[in-house]
Amino acid sequence: MSADPIRTVAVLGAGIMGHGIAQVTVMSGYTVHLYDIKQAYLDRGINAMDESLGRLLAKGKISNDQYLQIKSDLLKPFLNLEAAVQGADLVIEAIPEVMELKRNMFTEVDNICPPHTILATNTSTIRPSQIATATQRPDRFLGMHYFTPVVFMPLIEIIRADQTSEETMGIALDFALKTERVPLRIEKDTPGFIANRVLQFPKSVLLGCILDQDIVKPEALDDQWRTLTGSALGPFEIMDFAGLDTYINASNYLSRELHPDYTPCRVIQEKVNAGQLGRKSGRGIYDYSDGKPKIGLSETETAITAHDVMAVMINEATKIIEEGLCTAEDVDKTAIYGMRDKEGPMTYAKRLKPAELAQRLDELADMCDKEIFRPTEYIRMGAYL
Ligand SMILES: NC(=O)c1ccc[n+]([C@@H]2O[C@H](COP(=O)([O-])OP(=O)(O)OC[C@H]3O[C@@H](n4cnc5c(N)ncnc54)[C@H](O)[C@@H]3O)[C@@H](O)[C@H]2O)c1
Image 1 (cartoon, helix red, strand yellow):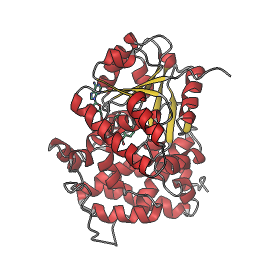
Image 2 (tube, helix red, strand yellow):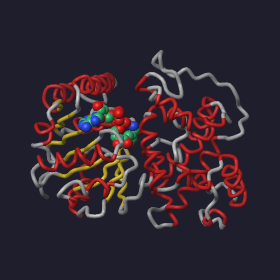
Image 3 (cartoon, protein in one colour):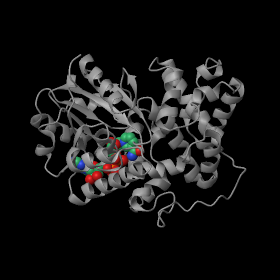
Image 4 (tube, helix red, strand yellow):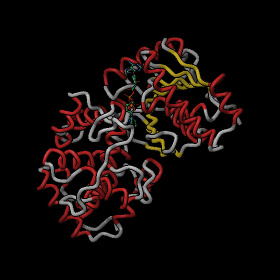
């Protein structure tokens, strides 16, 4: 068996995702070069990682030797891009979800890195093929989509771009396993791949409609969702955790690539304009000024329920299953390993009658004025059962 072709990994961006990716990578014994554009951003990422490693050490999940090796040897911060990537075998990019920013970054990285280096983007929505063309090595370019918080969510979508070679896919899959992740191989890149396309995008359209029309208090829906799925966080909390700016960037991209119904909702656009980006800025849908969100449960009977959130996910899943992009089992795997839900939407769907599900989706489409919620033929025919 040949030696591991990956020894040093450069992670670009030390934000929510970058510092998490860096952490799980150093914890598996790889050397990590963590790069960001300002010392303050680098410090913030390293401090967050320190806190997490400290908690894992206290719980005995990592040894003292491992902790010391990570701190003194394996993790290296960089403000200079050339120094960060020139010795890397794998570069994982986690900078903001803006196509031109990512393309420019990869053109630069491609010019610096040796020919063998594999380049991966952690984009959550953009098709990796649209970024790969900014480099001279599209065969060594792919998507590696991690989930937040990375330390607790083991899923990585390993996404083949138009020209990704089989060797590159194989190295990335192997690296995912060596870093104790659960890889899901995706052979065709469509916006949002499987997890976000099904579990996030339609849900965010529904949440946007709830906010704009003030249909349900976020805390009520979050509470219902936690009870229904066993998730630690409700959908509005997840939105805050992931960053409302990320939601806006993703929605703008999806409204162009998938359907105009994905156009960002008014309330969140106003929050982002006011600098309220979610948990990372102290305020978003909820207020985090005391560290924890101030969530007070107000209503139990709501016009849109957690079940409806599940219904729009199931509907979207049937679109990509019909297109042959994935199976129902793949969809459920993303919910279980990417969100830590107790079951996936396609297992949940097995308990629903097609006519009732289709009728509720039609009602949601009318209530929110969103055609993407109309039930598919797959649902009307009960093909998911
Ligand atoms: N937040 C999530 O839940 C989540 C999940 C999966 C994937 N993603 C994707 O990961 C990427 C990063 O998202 P995030 O939530 O970590 O964002 P973030 O805003 O928390 O972090 C981005 C980091 O990139 C840095 N940065 C900005 N411009 C840069 C540049 N030119 N070069 C290097 N660093 C630069 C910023 O200083 C910041 O520290 C995005 O593509 C996002 O879609 C996010």
